[in-house]
Image (cartoon, rainbow, N blue to C red; front, top):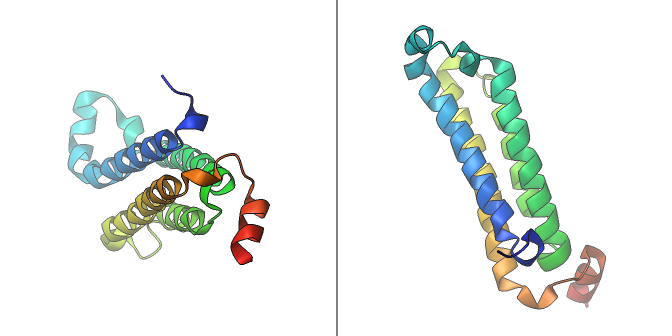
Length: 142
């Protein structure tokens, strides 16, 4: 088993899974709410539970994307996509409950796209391993 440093895609894949599960939770919740009293798991519908999952997703994503940017490709736009998606996701009810599924889908799409771009950029730039962001960007500007 290789360490995460040798394969940054592991964190991206974990971030994609966590974000996907978070989106699935938010989209399936309206269907499952009537069943919650039967299951006895009403904490799934709590805002703190949703925000905990989202916070974990953003934390894992930020570590993965910052690691990819500093060690491999030097690009920060995947991180911007992740954070933008996280903000949209956090304030998913800003346009009202009727538009919530659309804002959830948009936020999740931006988070997953950030991870996907990071994986793609890391794969394309294996020659830059063990470099720092400032060195990478200074050689790129020349």
